[in-house]
Length: 385
Image (cartoon, rainbow, N blue to C red; front, side, top):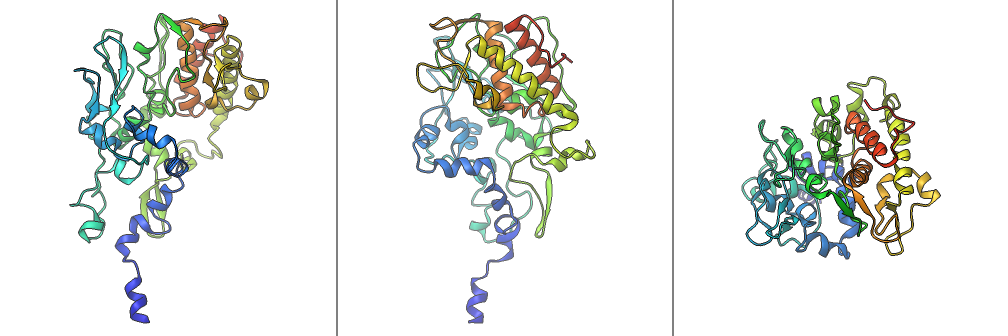
């Protein structure tokens, strides 16, 4: 019996750092990446997320592997200028703004180990039988000191070339997916007709806010950035090194850790440092109300699309708000660039700013300018920094 029990024991090389009860895999299972995988496993969204659409570029298991290798589908002979740096938008032969389509064969929507890390027969302990060596699973995307990922926003409308957001090392991996998927420069036109609840930036556009570059920026205004963007990377707050009984590893739950804030904000007991999130929440409520009064917001998913109701305006879940099709004038409203830009900014902040934490200064500037564009007056709760 003793020999049989000993033979059944897992070797320590399997447990550290991945498969122990305090290991990376167990941390990952607490993440939204894992929750999305489980909630949709075998569900109707799998075909969408991994099929011949743009979604698989981030949601499919081999999403980054395909993009890094240049394996995406575009219309005609068109190509994506900055594909090797994460860009997905391009100008189709028709002249229309387009997004590269996932070209892989994955049937599983799961952001897991092999999505971000290059695991091969040569370095996989399951294949080699050798103990894991720290650093042996390199990240798939370029993470060198001079590698600069691109967000979709182009500097002007002459071409679709994206914008570099600065060298971010290992955080480049996050930026490749946590992006608006829309080139706001070429997406917002002089005349904009709202025909879909999906108008605007995609969910999870944190990189566009964090970089201080991805919003609709108003002519004649200057835009700055916060010390968070200047001195921190995504992984500093979302993947700080944690001490476990089996060793020290980067946290793979991906949830922001208050301990990371406390290294600068000593004594902080929440992410609402110095009331910053509360201030952004109040200003976002003002902007939400202004956009709703103009007829641009809904949470309805089928026609007729009602404007936000009092309970929805009060719940603080800005990220749930959708663009209201056929709004304002009973038909398909025609928004100027500045009006559409205000709606775009609201959505990108609602879905990617963490109530301003990702870039407090930039978030405040976008809120104030967007509110003025809709109402003609500044918000009562916020002064533009």
